[in-house]
Image (cartoon, rainbow, N blue to C red; front, side):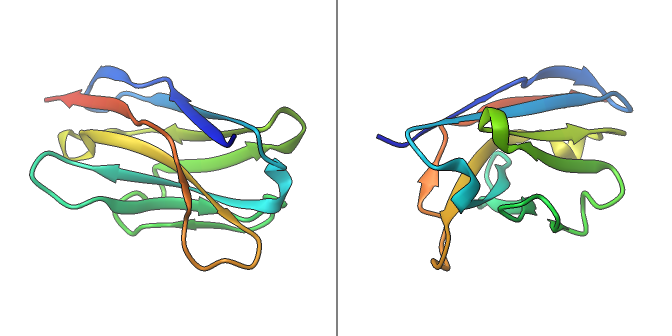
Length: 119
């Protein structure tokens, strides 16, 4: 059974940093492209960052580029999102997601972790 579990969310002041983690189990982690998505109150879920299976390629939404860094540790089946220079607009529930090799859609999702940035 595939399971993705996020951790590391919390309350932080504007300008601060947080590091999110996503621990995967029940999957051959290295066969999955991974991503972070977020959903702010009253808004649709949006893509924040993505990383290829090997970790060699990373992708970012314009809104987080230069502030967030996605990474992964395939040996420990874990993905990370380092978030710096946080603003209140980054307040959202953050979800990790996995997309198996050969598929176009993310098929596996975590339960989400809340990030709240106070002004």
